Image (cartoon, rainbow, N blue to C red; front, side, top):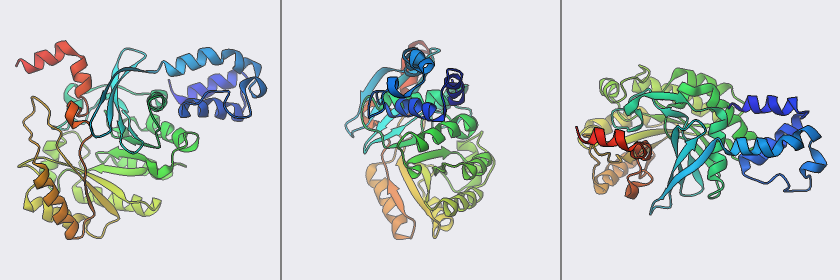
Length: 341
């Protein structure tokens, strides 16, 4: 269900803009309607009050917790069931963050990612995105939402932007604490700049070599790494906060000296942060995770050469929680078939 559909239903019940705002705010913040001085019986129209219990049940039913997998790093990977029986993953991150999914599956087909193994199954609605946040807030405080879970947000742009708008206006989340992650779709750069809520931008870079990028991200837009950086720099200057460039560190593939030289050439002097993330090992895929010592040395060397580099670990390493793995394990027959080949 889209957020706009919820608004239309509330209006049909007699809600004015302030009433819509109240109901949606309570939902996205995970707060009871009777909190504060204005209680539903004192504030909302009778039609809305009468329909509210059923509407609340429907909103909360859009995302239900199937299983939680806490990690030693303070994260917790959540397998979330949607109303039609499909599942997605959300991740509670350390320091009050939440990673949400924007699609069931993914069409980009990144070679090192489990999510894209089965392609795109369907879009996640704006309401289902908000429902992931509301569900997470029943578990712990959420002050930051990153769109880095299952799916490519730029391929579900209208739903994602509708959710971002609500999170940034009623969800009590600062705009720079909403992070839109993309492989580099030109439509995203254009649309993000037009919104009233302008989220921070994260761009999946992974290599400075155009040919290698086409192999690693076979169905990503055919922008070169240089073109991606130029588009990102424009958005960074527009919003006033740096672009985060994501680099999944793959042993023997994109961890060589030539790649490090390329990073310095592209990013030195840019309003940017390079997030270097050692690969989260996935059974059945040929990619390997470099040692933490090597990853640390690479990040330190880049920092010394003028590129602000942060070495990050993928949340949930100790529970094999790479994006898409929980969902794959939940589909036991399919998982067994893949492993037996």
